[in-house]
Image 1 (cartoon, rainbow, N blue to C red):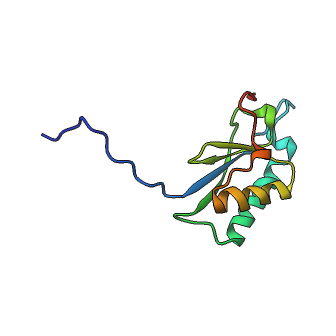
Image 2: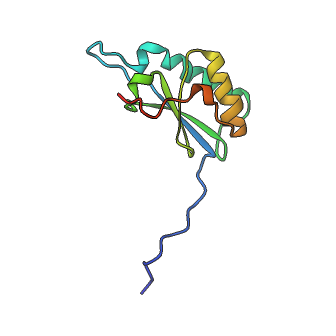
Image 3: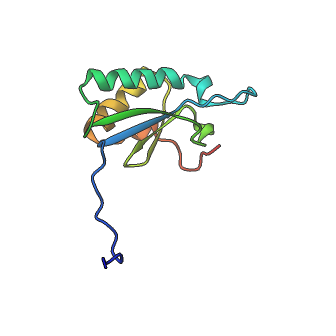
Length: 119
């Protein structure tokens, strides 16, 4: 019989970093990330990651997400494994997230979502 008392060792992730962009659209006209340029930010990030040669196993993955429930800060994106929440306004903000955090692991303090902001 095998010993199940100890958890298996943690495995390194398939990706070094994973960024999820909320692209949620609310059909009732309620404010949402989709109304604040979220798709453009996602598209630009995906393009930059490919351009920088950072896409793929062991590197960075850019994904769409539904509602991340941080609407008050929208548009939002979250980087894992750090669990760092960002807001952004334009391509320059996305470039800073790519260059600082996704490439070099340096959090972009000025774009952090305040911890109290939720829906």
